[in-house]
Structures are given as C-alpha cells and as structure tokens.
Image 1 (cartoon, rainbow, N blue to C red):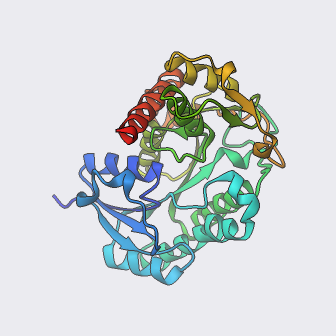
Image 2: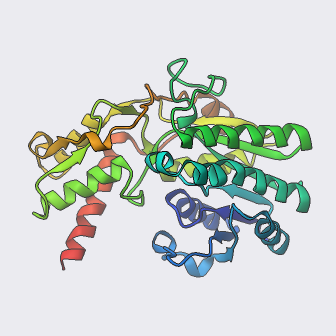
Image 3: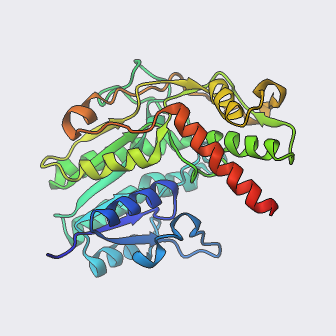
Length: 324
C-alpha cells in the first residue's frame, strides 16, 4: 500500500508540528515547506525532523509553490503558514496581507495548475469575526475583522471558497478559535502568562505586564484542533467549519489558573501596561462547534484548566533547565 503524502506550509509552527505528528501517526509521508531564512527555527519539529521531507518554498513566490507541489505530488495540502501574530499585523500590515491573504491565492493557484484533485485546507481564524454580530459565532456569522491580520484572514477564507466554487477544488477552511499549547510562541498571551509564571516561580522576575485583563477568548488545545483539520480533508464534500470549545475565559481567569498551578497569587505579580492594549479590540469571541461535532465527529479532549496547567508545567521544566 502506497503511503498518502501531505504537504504542510508552516510546518515549523505550533500547529504544523502537531499536524505533522498526527499525519505521521496515520502513516503519511509528510512534506514540510520552509522558507529560506537566515534564522530557521526547527525547535518544534526537532523530535520528528528525521521523518519529514523539508523543502524550500515561500507563500510570497508562486513559482516555488508550484515546484514544491509538482516535485512531491501530495494528495493533501495544509496551509498553516502566515504572519500569524495579531499585534504584529498593525506594524506590518502590507507584509501580513502579502502572506496571510495573497499567499493563499498563490497556493490555491499552484494546486489548480499542478493537480486540481489535491485536497486543500486553509487555516481561517476566529479573528475574522472581530466585532461580532452574534454570540456564539457559527459558520454563517458575518465577518467584521478588527485588525490587519483579521482582514487578511477574511480574504484567505473567501478566496478558498471562490476556488472551491469556481474550479471544483476540494478546499475547506477551519475557522479555528484560539488554540494553545506548550509550543505556543512567547508573544501570545497564554504562553506569555505561563512562561512569566515559571520565571516568577523560579525567582527570575517578580512582575508580569499584560494588557486588557477583561479580554475573553475561546481557548482550546492545539493538538485537538489539528485533528479537526485532518478530518475535514477526509470528507467527501469540502466545507467550512468552526473549531472551538464553546466556552470563554478571560485573561484574568487565565492568570488565576496559571499562577495557581505554581501556588502563587496572581494579584501580587500581574500589572496592566497600556503598551499591550490593541488599537481596536475584538468583542466576545466564542465559537459554536456543533457542525464540526455532528459532521466530522470532532470533540476536544483537553479542557481549559488542564491546558493551562500543562503549559505552566512545561515552562517550569524549561526555565529550570535553562538555570541548570
């Protein structure tokens, strides 16, 4: 039996590393796209790197995408690469548009040109809902993005729908709500908090500066969410799905659980710094995962408290190892 082959853009990121693990466990050959860069970071995939085929390509360059697909002939393509940090999209809005928006078009067009039978997954985002029109958000909730990142993701989402309807591609989008893990980047608030807790617990810091403590998000575990991506491409009919927990928690709750996991009182250490407030904040983001549950059979395995505790435990191990 010939192994199925999947290509992942953004394979070195949080989601890419978990998806690569999942696909390898399913018996796939996994092709990981990496950009030519002076600072390549393979930390998240180091434990599986010898089982991956890494190829150079870039969402800014359609020719490189065509070559990667033509050379490796995947049956599934997962587009997880993007300028994915909301805060950075304010200072780099054009680059965010080139990668997070137009990059999707380049990849879809490469698939159309090389092999329109390839199944395609687009990483859409809850940030597309932004100034929400209804709570909770579903697959038919209107978009109202509140950042250059959110705007770019809306473009990526609709161009995926357009190529599906115009060219008959098996192209699906996952409107994933916030999903975290010990592999999350330090610039994201969940990891900023859990890493900050670890540094405070180890005596390296005393204070943790954050932005809006009342901001609420629907937070889940990244390893659960990549399973939904894979399930979408196993369906006979392509479609779009909200992937979420259906629960919201505030940054304040995040702090309570995270500091509590290290037996600390968050109120003694957390300070609000206006530099971390967004120019335009999104409203109450909470997803309704009914369609994903009913159609894909998807459910999360890890709840909010356990997720935060896992992240604190991992960061405590990390900081202690750095201290020697």
